[in-house]
Image 1 (cartoon, rainbow, N blue to C red):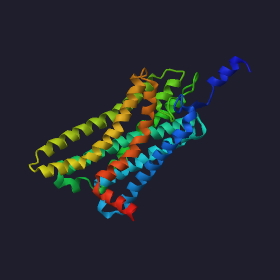
Image 2: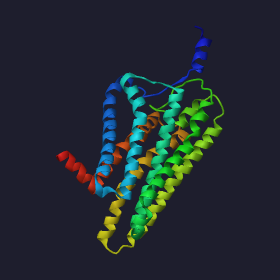
Image 3: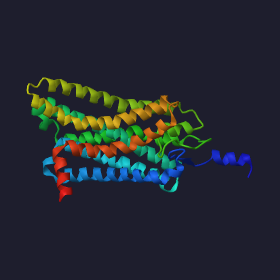
Image 4: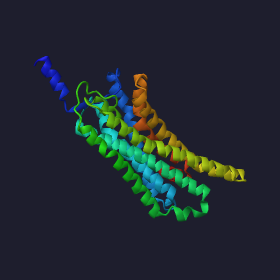
Length: 313
């Protein structure tokens, strides 16, 4: 086969190549052990949260309904990246077809923006509970919570739905290597042999209209909550009110820190050390689903008691 035909074959390839940790390929099988543990704890932890909320009558409250939405979202995010991540570290399966890649990035981005919406909904829940306690039950009814959930899902799907089709119309040539163990829109589009300005602008619009606006509204709700709490005369009541927000603040930081960090690196920080990109690439899909169940189990008495009772018995 001639060099020209090899290049043509490479340029017309229908697959991308995912990456593990460059330079540590010989250690991949050992690195897979903690990765398997992280996925196992994430899946079991979120399933435990869902089971406890479903079976404990005292947890039939808006706060825990939103928490169950967060657990479902985290569970979905873990399952989206698990096949390709473990495939690379177990058997070195780096190839992924274009259609499979586009499907994966659709679900990853959709679930990520859905999680942002859920965290905003949880911030609204805490705002109403602390700032409008007398109207809490009448504002956050099950019907309203259901509508909030459907609106959040609808927004995420509607904004992400065009992305796979926008990527599918491109020809891909040159190196098909991606930097992560899963597909992301902002990375795949850079492999296209075409003008990607529309994708870049739309991607920025989606990020700003979801993560950007949601994070600002969460900050605003936190400021209103803090103002209300500081006006409470009793020190014990102030501490109790703030303590109900600690878990949510941790969940917000766990989600937005890697999401914003990875987005900044891909758009503006390509000169950052490759190791930083790799680390952020693993923190983004792995740690929020891993740590959210732990945080809520530790900080929420009802969930903590049920988990302790289950393991002690």
